[in-house]
Image 1 (cartoon, rainbow, N blue to C red):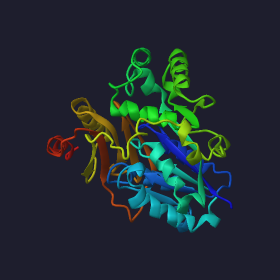
Image 2: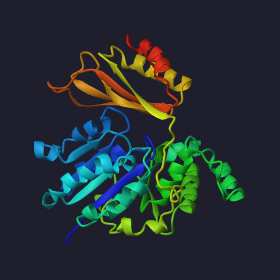
Image 3: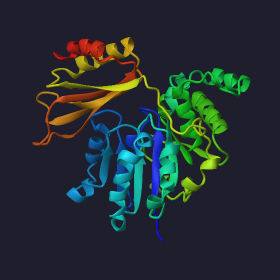
Image 4: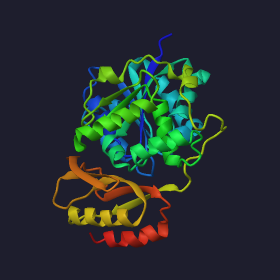
Length: 347
């Protein structure tokens, strides 16, 4: 029986998963691709970005982009992922493949395990897991610390009891990968790139390739068609959580939503956000900015201390034209953040 191939795209916050997915949809080579977007936070920013990629010209095609907004896919497989997959599988004759973009906080293995459920495995298989890695972040040590120090630390202590949840998450995403895409390589030196690639290759299973990928531009034939049947190969993809019945992400990681009617000066907004980043442990800021007298919507994406903006499309009459951002970080206390965000209300 024909099974729909499912590609899981995983990776840390801000690594470039959505950019990769946009390029894939814009260069689908005639494939009918259904997309599940898993967004951390109350606002489906990534799903809206994907709808603006201008490949969804009809309402039916737009319905192929489905957002799961109630947390990580691996945490909501029964409550949300399972019924969503059931709905997609009723339309399997009109779908060539399914892409699942996980949250930056999602463990890939529990999601893959869901494809062993009889109701799903009869109709779908995990074709491959693609892990997107930010080369600049690794070179700067912002995700896993200094590469040389981390390598030495692991060599000295095989138990790794001192790892943080973020490091464990990163290792689990690498361990489950069939392919690693290295993004933002143009922002680091050739020496740093060689070091990052060398370190990654030591962390991966034999045969897993590391491929540089600029602005998400990569041939779809490289991303699709692994035929790995990952759900039947989980024993070869070890996880820190294999001995646990359930897993818990770092409970201190949370998200807050910021809504501002309009932003008179985007540069002032960015300056204020930089101030927030220096004061609080913020991992990611993303959303849309309403700039007065501009007919187009501004997209704002921030990871670490980098904040980038670009205009993606015209505001539509039905859009709620406000500045809407999601801030993701650790130990973000709502009252303190709200006090700081009051400074933004007049930006």
